[in-house]
Image (cartoon, rainbow, N blue to C red; front, side, top):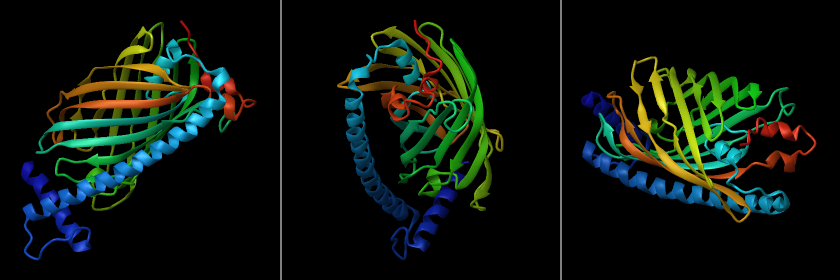
Length: 334
C-alpha cells in the first residue's frame, strides 16, 4: 500500500515537472522534487490565506452594514432556536462559516494535513424557486494541505434539500448533491463531475438537536485517468445546549466508498458558544476527533476549529413580502 502511494506521488511530481508546474533540475530525485513542491505549497498556502482573509474582511464589512440596518429587530444570540440553527449542517437561516481541521497524523501515510473550508447555508423560503422551502449548503475547501506537503484548492460541493415535511419538533427533506472539480492539485480533489441524491432529517425537542445529513455523489464525467467515484457521506449530528448560548456537540464526517469498500469512521465531541458581537450573531466551537477505522490513507486524529456569522432575519430584510416567515419554519421555542 505504501509503495503504491509513493508511486502515485512520484508520478504526480514527474507530471508537474514536465508541464512546467515545478522547476526541477535535470538530475532531479524524488527528494528534490518533494522539497521543491513543499516550498511551492507553502507559498501557495500563504497567498491563498491572504485571499481568504480579504474575502472574510469584505464579508464582515458588508454584513456589519446589513446588521446595522437591522438593529431595531436584533434578537439576543442566546435564543434556543438560534443555537440549534447554528449547529445544524444545513440550516433555515443564512450563515457564513469558516472551519479549519488540523490533522497531525495519518493512517497509511507520513506527514501532517490541514483543511480550511469556507461554506454558506442558503435557505430559500417557499415560492422563491419551488413551492416548498429549500435548505442549501455551499462548501469550498480553500486551502487543503495533504501529507506530502501539497497545498491547493479542493472540490466545490453543493447540496440542496427540499423540505417535504416540517413540524414543531422536526423536519425532513430530499434533494440533489453536486461536486464540481475545482481542485488546483491532483491530490486535493477527485477531478470528477459528480451528482447524486441527498437527504436530511432533524429533530429538535427541548434543548436537544439531533439528526443526519446524507449525500451520495456519483461521478459521471471528468479526468478519465482518475478513478470513478461513488461514495456515501454521512453526517449524524447531535447538540445539547446549557443556556446562555453554551452547547456541546458531535458531528462526525463519515464516508463509505462503494467502489473500494474503504470507510472513514470518526468519533468526535466538541463545545462552543453562540454570542453577540455588536449587532452580529457569532458561533465559535472547537471539536477534536479520532478515526475508528483502519483503512488508509485516512486521518488518524485531529482537531477542528469553527467560526460562523448568523443572520436569522435575512429574508425579512431582502424579501419581506415573499413568504418571509417560511424561511424560519419550523421555529421551535422552549
